[in-house]
Image 1 (cartoon, rainbow, N blue to C red):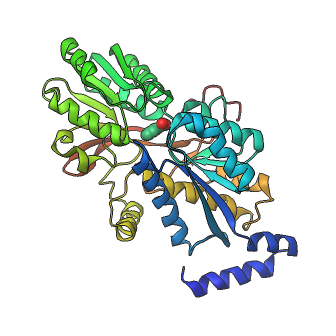
Image 2 (cartoon, helix red, strand yellow):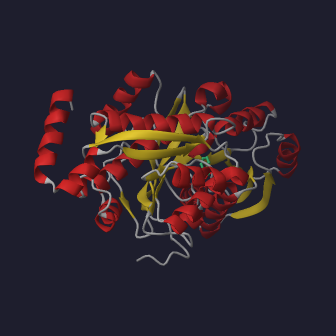
Length: 389
Ligand code: BEZ
């Protein structure tokens, strides 16, 4: 929307709202962005912010007539600092909505504060199952996935490929453990067996001893969850250890998303499963990718899509109340019922607030995670422990 149309839209909105609502809708909407700007997930945080800002820019810098003001906190992917960090946004900065974060452990602390204070929270990555499980709440939604989802979808594919004995390797924290659990559930249902789970503390990248163990055990397949800088190092080390040619590696798509340039030839041919892929070739995705590339001189990845869709989710809520956030019930209900026209494909939210979405099979070809098929159509998280219906 150009500047003149934006001004006209604001005038029309003012003419149709009562005075108190006009005052509210004239004020800026404060969005607290709690994302990693440092550490192994720093680039993931940048992509999420880029995606969010792109959608806001496409709407002329306003959502439902409200100009957006960003307040940013670097959460460093450090759970021990998470409660203090999120409290700064809620109690010091009085943000209207929090968007964050990448790391499951940090996000669980954010969800607890959001539940206690009633602050609106949109999670643009972290998959912690608890957020749309026991910690679910009407004011918490995701634009991403639950850890169970990509794990489960990858387990389906590994079993279909006929692998029987798998080893898993990941960081020992919620995202790693829950993704492995989802993988194991589907893989063993499909006739396979996870013979050994390997892990190391987050965000360590000393993989050598574990790679030696894989070489000794010679499973049919290795399933890995790593992301960001850790994924780059793991894929390179796996290749350098000579394992890529002897033991097939499969992963949830975080293993190769936003990392391919750094992984180079070591990632070629890797098979992963995720709710986004290169080569979807839909008009919606192509338009998004073109605008993202023009704006940031970068190709988007799954994190950029999730940031973009976090903004779309917020916009859906705000539009229903014409920007008046005091109409809380109506805003929350509109967000939760929204049908999001995502670059990944249209999706809706489950009763627990988690996307019900396709999971794609992807193969690394050059610098792309090329879509080669759909692993599971419209997969819903089981939302174990969530009492919202
Ligand atoms: C997580 O901690 O939930 C997570 C981090 C990076 C990629 C995917 C999940």
